[in-house]
Image 1 (tube, helix red, strand yellow):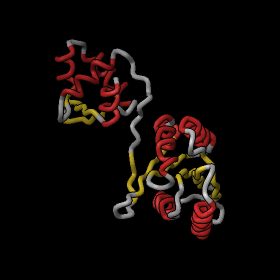
Image 2: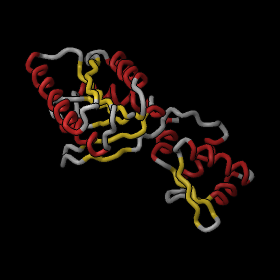
Image 3: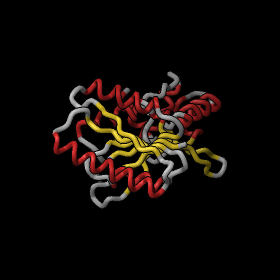
Length: 216
């Protein structure tokens, strides 16, 4: 089972296009996030968009369930918690989409997603420029890092085009086995990428690794 979660404004394609690109399965669920309080005109336009989503997806697979969750838009902390509640309550593989919906919900939904990266299997962005749908990699910003591995992460970051385990070992003045363990820990957390180049393992900093170092 898959659950798709997306803020919804008035453009139903911002919900349906990522869903159709990813692919539906029998029994999937589509959850749309809307603000709790709206003007009557906004409510009517939103209701039309919800109807469009339901009609489009029911034609593709009648077993798909489409629901709307109301999120507080005028209390930031409460809005974040409510978005987190949605992410934690849904079942199956969770697919999130950015690029649509009221601006008041965007930051709440983004922060909740960054907090619950362990729940997210796939993320998409709907592009305003051309309507394209791009898959994103959400950086794991809250994953704990073993304290001894921080120094190894910093040494990898100093190499603009990547480095190797032997090079890091020489700079750190630690054993190769220790550096290799650190690199493996960092790789498991998505903070570095590794690849074999002949018999040497190359290491490169990821965006998540850079962000963690900047925030540290």
